[in-house]
Length: 440
Ligand SMILES: [Zn+2]
Image: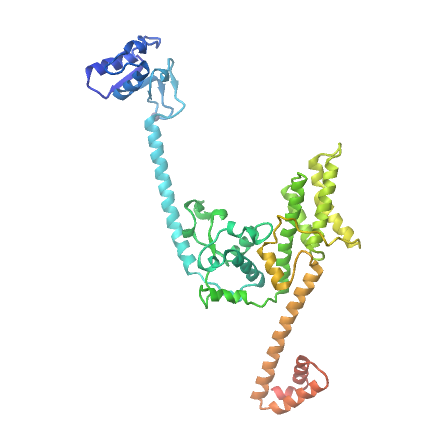
């Protein structure tokens, strides 16, 4: 018999039944039909015999060896037993059990290692503080826009990327990545789910989509909401940072429109093509408005769709012409042809909270041309810079003359300049350069 039995019972009748059930000739054919084994006590159905035999003895098929440990495989009933020797596809019961135990051990070790490595990470996240007043203008503006979406959770709790989906028409990922890379936003492992953090090549990693973020407290005022008012009431003046942020935002507004047009014509842009168009659009936005770029996107996608319908053109080939066509349209506009600026925002296409902040603070929208935007931010920067210099000049004038005990002649020289028609700043400057002896 190719099946070895291990009895779990000492009942002789039961042992006899099991032996009859498994009895076979040399070719592996069973000696008795299962239906001939019933009735046995309360068992009357042949279908119940295998189950009962399984309960009173374990059967090992010598024809079937485990592919891991080479021992005979345990089988459940006659149909499982093989007539010819072979290796089993699955490991035996014992090997499976051992594999599972090893797997559990590995998982537990990984969890322990993760916890060990996360501990200093968590401790650091709890002690970190940043100076709100030293944040750049673009970072402050993005934080205001995130605050408009998540409220107090920005400073008092945590938030995730999905919460910020409506930051721009194309989501928030790039903007959150930027703040995170600058250590302005931090992630809090204690707020995220267990799957968010993992160890790869010995260091802790996290899945961005599962991470929870927060703005660390201010170094001077702590984490209260009134510390955040430093950011809300901030005066903006960094022309370059503001211009670049506007361009980054405006590109999302243009690209959202392009994707919408492409989906209407069932056109799919390749990743490289998208990157190329983003670059071209960003360049175009230095001169033109978002709405003017929308007009270009509408036109080139429509033209590509018309091309795709021609018999000698494939859809892929037609879509591939879009990046070059966008640039061509900008070149035509640069040569003097008028670009429509009355293109309207589609129903489902949001402005996003960053766009709303640009609108409320600087009166910008999709119709603001890039040339005007850059001019406005440059003016803003100059005004602030002028203000600072004038203030410093006045302080130097007062301090210098007080220390030098030359206040009266200095003031007389100053008023003379003003009377001659000079502005306050110019008069201060002229007084100081023309009368160096008063300021020694
Ligand atoms: Zn085995």
